[in-house]
Image (cartoon, rainbow, N blue to C red; front, side, top):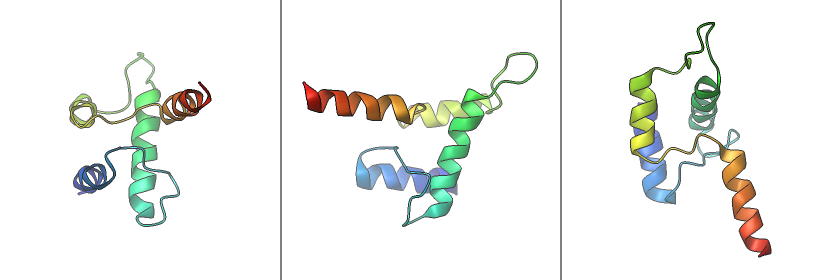
Length: 80
C-alpha cells in the first residue's frame, strides 16, 4: 500500500523526495523516512536492514536514498 502511494506521489510530483513532514500524507512521509533509515542501517554482519527486494523495488522507481545530497546539489546548481 505505501509503495503504491509513493508511486502515485512520484507520478504527480516527478520525484520521490517526500518530506518526513509531508502534510498531505504524513504517513507516506514517515514511511519514506523509515525506508531511508533502514537503507543506511546495518546489522552486526554489515548487511543493510532493508530487505533487498524492497530496496530493488524502490531503486526501480528512482527512489532517492540520500535526500540531503540531492537537495545540496540542487542548491549548488542554483548558485552556479
